[in-house]
Length: 320
Image 1 (cartoon, rainbow, N blue to C red):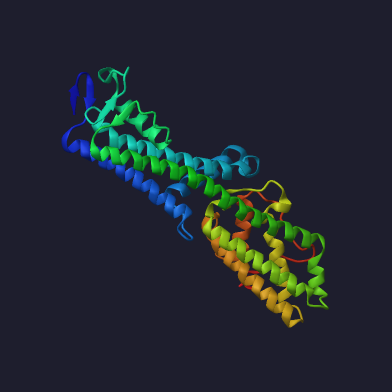
Image 2 (cartoon, helix red, strand yellow):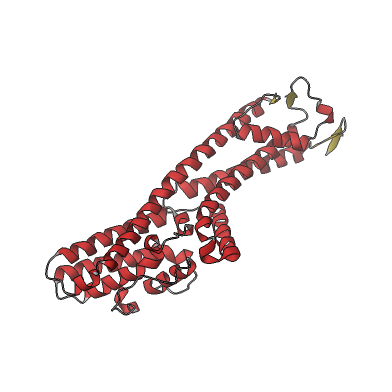
């Protein structure tokens, strides 16, 4: 460290170590972004921690119901905010050791009376936001390459944020559609129609349910962040409606009709896959679908779950 005209600067090997640290920070953000949005079935460690923190904080402050529906949206905003903050901090670390010697200041700015740290943060912030005021600009050749690259990262971050929202909400819509479908079937007493099946219609209904459950399972694997979105209305809350899907599968498996038994078995396997996708996110050490769905409902504050009025909860063996 040395002092030049009252300004503290970093020189020599230490300067390049600080700049290297900034590059590492930005690279870590890009890696987390890739794993969260583009890696099939992956989720970045940083984004996962932010989402879990928001989810647990909302539950701790307002309970699973009161603030639960805000945890998901706030989690997305929090992740995007942390990404942007770290890109700015990383850029500031890259510029800070070189701000005194390798940047020029516009007219009206007195370099000797300014803070290197604040100027580095300022340059990084306006570069990331792609504003580029031009009052503090790099003069070193390598910095004239680095700053446009950071601007591209900032633009990409904005684009990714919009794309992420456009990916997550259709997945949530499919989840809510499945919950709404199960609610409608329960009101229409589909459990009784399966017991008294005299046509192929109940089997077709179970096959359609199995397809929807499989789709939701894939959505959860690709967009794990959707787990942290809680639905206010029970009829749209999958956590409250899955027990009824278990009931339909259990009733169908003991039907005298072969097509109904086959469709029910297909639904059983789809529910098992969904439980496997849910298990890393819920508070249970048990592996059975029934236990996972119970924990899922508890985590989302759903105490009034949807069931067949005359059906007991399926045993573990029924859903294997």
